[in-house]
Length: 480
Image 1 (cartoon, rainbow, N blue to C red):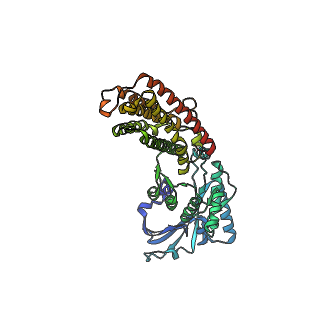
Image 2 (cartoon, one colour):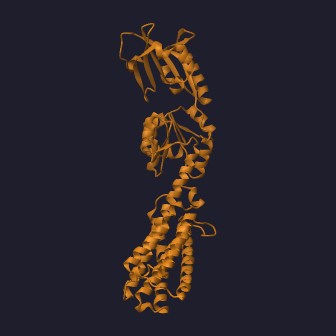
Image 3 (cartoon, helix red, strand yellow):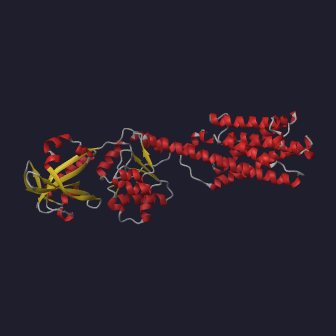
């Protein structure tokens, strides 16, 4: 409609705004696939019903044709020729609608579908709507990242095949809406997974295909900009539209693209995977750390004559550790993690927690026995608590660099600069606190020089053992 209205020659020659008055309208629907408007020409005082829509639907309500203001009866041979011309245009990528009209009594003020009969065929309007320049590159990029691209369209199969060839999308078979309609849900689920292109779909058929894919466990995004895309945008896990779309499409969408290039879809997919990957990192680190600390606290409480760590020290420790993790959203994600979609899997997190968590307890107990038997802290609660406070904080903070990647840290994979800075700053604060003016207020005391040598061995052992265990469970359980 916008293209027709922008055809300025029509405005100047027909003088639509001054010479015609709209009388009534028969709205478009996806069953009839056509719409009509009734206008009155002021100079002739007569009503004209003008109908436009899908070529086959317009042909079905026409009994006459008009060429150079001369009318003739439509015969079967005319229909064959007209459909052949339409097909040729479709195969060249043109979308084609037919236009027909008839004069109706001027005393009639309301019109209905039954008035769409015995029309005179005027001709076609062919629209060329080529795919965006970035479409081919975007589809290839999405395929590389494990995102299957399927076409769900209301266009006919000829136009659809042409567009698919232009964007490099292989088409073995086009599933038509007439084939989808009688299918059971189970049949449609099978077809939806194997077929790439669906054409001549109604809005509800688009939504039905999406739901069939979802029942098979797929996460489905749908991109559309028309009125007929509303149900599909609602049904999809992620509905995507553009800022030039019709209002109903934008209201139904979850995301509205402002960029003109479709490569923004690839950027969105990758950014989403990075966010998800960093969320999983945080959960794994927190779960492993807390699981290990539980064993450490329970064990120490069983044989120590005092608390292994004072409440204020636990709060300070947690505050500093949480601060070191605030930069995780900025962290890099391994390229291998971004190659395919990832799903939430509690079992993977549980395996990680069970295997990695107790390792920290091993070195917590090593710290306990160092403080008790090397530095004789049996009767010096502050010294013991300070020693475990520092070891616990540094081990939790530095282990972030081991658990954040499936690769070898510092050699094959580096953390982001903000995450590196926060972990170093927190480690420095943890080392400084026992000697700071705040030490007494939180129950800390200066540590002997030999403690720091022992701590280096403990932390090195912890990092090496955790790296080995991480690599082992990644290979054994195919974790990422």
